[in-house]
Image (cartoon, rainbow, N blue to C red; front, side, top):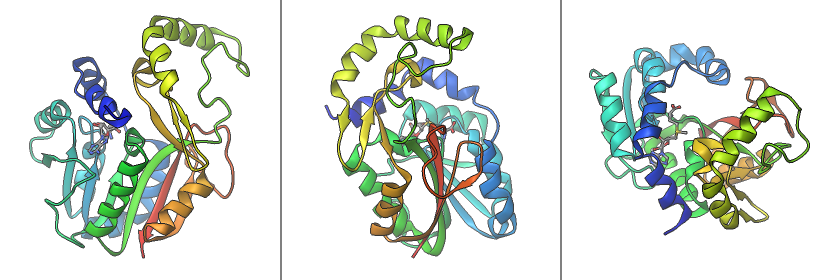
Length: 255
Ligand SMILES: C[S@@+](CC[C@H](N)C(=O)[O-])C[C@H]1O[C@@H](n2cnc3c(N)ncnc32)[C@H](O)[C@@H]1O
């Protein structure tokens, strides 16, 4: 099974679904990206990919002209439909969005690093599909793990770390999850373009795609996007490396 198929299975796990049921408010970078374009959003159609149990549905559905959300976890789609019965929510895999017509959305969003669940081939398929369903000039917004992150792939006790209660708590969690990371660390990948990294998410049960902002920007331009803007975890626009930020937010437009 490819790593991305294993990741997909994790999102069907009952415990993981419970985590997303509790998932809360918009993140600061999301507010910084969406609030300045609220007028455009009100008039537009937004496709929200990988919604989990609907954290972004709660924030975005009331702000846009028309909202459609989907996920490739059947369990999470059912949870989101129950929590937000008025919203249009369906099952779909972002690698094949043939249920949606060409140039039918003004905005496409894939929040909280959901794109990083996929392998390189899957990621390029999603970029091609997003470009196809977006209208020319439409916004493509997502977040993705930062390959420059200074603690990328380290276990909590591996330096550099800040000693203290957080480090001890994270170490205890990692020890409890040792069966999973011992297996997945052997499947980690480093290439000139990206890395597949087993990080602490969902008790070290996933492999995530990590990419530098320079490479991600090139990948977006190659896939037919332009005007790429990058924000750090705290919502500040950056131009260059940001090693303290574990993930980065991207906003670009269909060329
Ligand atoms: C880290 S979770 C974030 C969930 C939600 N967006 C949030 O912020 O709470 C990533 C989500 O992306 C979904 N996902 C990953 N790959 C996907 C794909 N190819 N198609 C649709 N959903 C996908 C997962 O099922 C999961 O719900």
